[in-house]
Length: 234
Ligand SMILES: [Zn+2]
Image 1: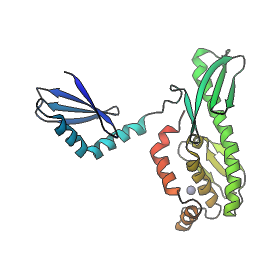
Image 2: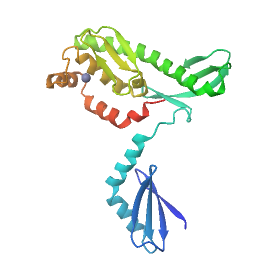
Image 3: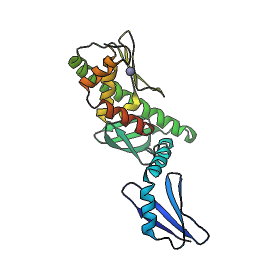
């Protein structure tokens, strides 16, 4: 029994013919669609059926995607505000992170035992992202607060699982370092969102009105975060 691979604009799938089947079945497993069909079914019929079921297929493919961890390290690249950095790993005397233009070199000290290597590497990377986040968010807060005529307090960078940022009644603002892995226009939305809380410490209609006034792409950014948050992980 051999499989035929079919490409559509949004996904590819394998078609298996079997003499024992009486009807066509579509199955999504591990992010891959497989179509099982009885002998005698034409490819045109199968393609038409898949097209008809496209919404169902996309929904199931998306669900798997959201559960899948990204493979940044395995693919030797890292996202930074909409750009992609090539990642190089080295062993050296001292652990360090070297960043130049589109390259990030992670040096893990040769004194680090192999069983601790991965943990040290991840800690170095996260620290680097946190430093990037601190300088980027500090600049963006300055830029937006002048436009919005508000004044922020301290800026903190955090590593929360459930929030992108916060604003306290003391005017302290917090931002999640993982936003450094999102495009700039998405991270900027979170800046405007938190600054808007300096005027409205709630999610009232007036709060959202203020956010949209300064950031018309707010809804797109929220949707982007909903659909891509699984990618903002090391
Ligand atoms: Zn909020």
